[in-house]
Length: 161
Image (cartoon, rainbow, N blue to C red; front, side, top):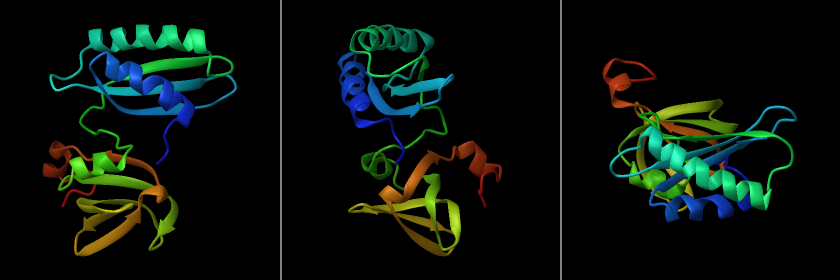
């Protein structure tokens, strides 16, 4: 699963959790002029702009002191939203029975994108059911994964049938 480098996760996750939020995941997109660090946070009561500001303030201070990223970058704090990204095996387990779209580094059955219902997590593999077919997808083969919101499924969007 494509997530920020481990040194950033180890630095940021404890700060987010120490503020009382779940650190859903961290994305880092390096670029010489437009690098971006995006941190997804959540809580049982949801996320408001004030929550994002609070986390941004704390994280900015630590990043300024620790300086783990060379050059300029944009820091973005976000709620995961209805189309929540999945970064960890435990998140696939948590949303078992939900529909997800996964992008793969390399094709499985000649496909690099698969949408299906999460059947189970077996060891390091995720079983996705798409129609009559079950795909066994190694977690390490997934470059990106997002839940498909229920409202899209009911309207037939994003492979909702």
